Length: 261
Image (cartoon, rainbow, N blue to C red; front, side, top):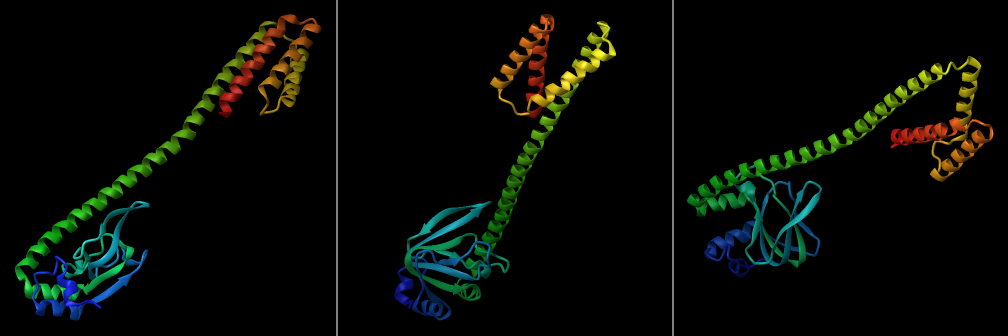
């Protein structure tokens, strides 16, 4: 139970007379807490003035998705909340959680407002003016935090959009390269007056090659297949084309890797 001696032992109430201390005890109450107990929460209506008596209380504030400890109450007389004594739409600015078992004195905001106006009318006018200024600064700070968070989201979204866009650009460039290479090859074949039957045979060989080569092949396996193909060409007496086929296979593999990367 809170006694006059408990309140007078705090720097907050040490100058009050017996009648004033008795009025505080009449309107307020003692709250005991243990480790981890939440006394008040950030964003909730600041309906009570909380005065630290003994133990240890930590105050936390949430910034985006992280909770940060602001400070700890360890000195009798430290206080928090009660802001609705000065403005009806005020909320707690932090969350208070017990770090060591102890006691707090809790006074309703309406009683705080009534007693303060009776005892310190000039001081109340000063408090209300300062409080309105602090509220405006707090609102500006919250808006700034929201803008910073929005900027981070925008940056992340832009990065995520740029990645597939860059991949699409590389794919288009690769297709353009292959188109030019195909027309150059057709021009060379036409220059050598390739007959229709011979062209059909080459196209059949190309189709067979696509079936033999998997899309995700091992580079060493590919090298073995290239050696096998050029060896066959040499045995068949077409050594002049062996190196050309080897180069063509290397080009196809390079462009395929660029498209899939």
